[in-house]
Picture 1: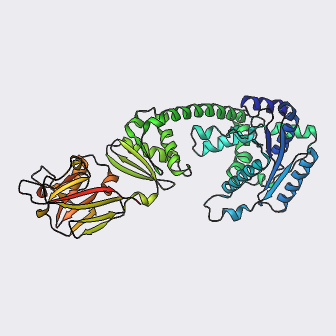
Picture 2: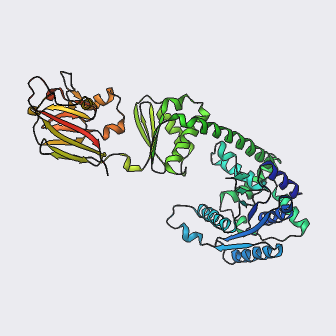
Picture 3: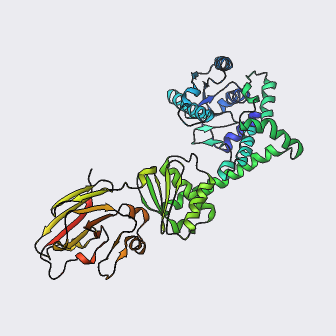
Amino acid sequence: MIIAKARRTIIRYGMLSRGDKVLVGVSGGADSVALVHALFELKDEWNLSLMIAHLNHSFRGEESELEAGFVEELASRLNLPFESMVIDVPAAQKGSGKSAQEMARELRYRFFEEVSKRYGANRVALGHNGDDQAESVLMRFLQGAGTRGLSGIPPRRDHRYIRPLIEVSRKEIEDYLEEKDISFMTDSSNKKEVYLRNKIRLRLFPLLLNDYNPRLKENLIHLSSIMRKDDEYLEEVVEKISPGLILTRGDNFVTLDASAVLDLHEALQSRIIRKFIAAVAGDLQGVSYLHLQAVLDMLRCGSPNRSIDLPRRVMAIKEYDKLTLRSGGDKLIPQPFFYRIGSPEAEVNLKEVGQVMKLTVSKNPFDWERKDFARNFAHFDLDKIHFPLIVRNFRKGDRFQPLGMKGKKKVKDYFIDEKIPLAKRRETPLLISGETIIWVAGYRIDNRVRVGEGTKKVLKVKMVPLVS
């Protein structure tokens, strides 16, 4: 009898506590009707307060209206509070980029949340059963899911959503309703082989059960339980170790220690990548196994600087031993910039890279503080400088003569030797006098414009953050 099974499932997964207020989602079909009757029979054991919610998705016209009336009458017979709402899924779907099923699910959960708040319900009970579980696992297997997907439908989610019939078969539900002489509505769309789930239920499962394994559904339910436990454990491990992998973090990016990620067991590597993609993108929509493997393959390759585009406008950037996951698409690459400086006493806002370049002149060649030796300060012999100066970002073929060297060097080779990340190179300003790059800002000046014994005036340049 399904009551005993539902009771066991509730206890096994800690679905209910005494005094809970439970909103029951009832479509009018066999599963949800059986659910509300089962909880009605069990309500005294947990001192439950029950209420019924029904959402009309406007998919099936008059049939949907009949279901709404049926559920309202059911609530009246059981003397339970009732709430219903009509939504136009096709209208909401337009322009969203989501399928009808995705949009319906989003609106359904939004409806449950609103009604729960109105009634103070701390649990929402849904009517998924064991056959639904088996179908979900097989469907996700066919779609190439990993352990999370093969764990199927969670019996309990977010401590709010519970599925007391998740270990009860569809046949047991139908037998229960027949024994109790309880009527229910039949959804005609369940017989249409339009959706993958229906194809699996109507065509694939009968074939597999009859010709291969009559216990297949039961085995798939067991598999989902095993996968769920493994997945939960691995996620606990990821939560423990992930903070130690973070080097820096911002609103739309996170930088990880790439070597430390690769030192992890392979079972954890892709989970780490997936966790932080979700953190910067907000969700994992469109992110597949192949995307996660592409990021890991990039980390393993010999190239010190690479990047790949991921769904949700996320970019994965490898810079030597660092992996940055950043959202924002085209905003990741600084726009080309070009500024002209007409005098040695000037200030220019480099808004593309969030910096300000300030120029001043000192008649004493030794007039600078110790702090001026920091990377964002530079000093030049003013007599060797020709105005106007140009400030721009790096271009292919740029060369300069780094301080202390006799010959010229490609700026690109200098960046590589100094292990300057690729993204950082794109936003590094170059200060130019005539045809000479006199400063790779923040790193090295050109040897030909250095301050020496004959220097009479010093051009002092410093970079400071742009304050918006």
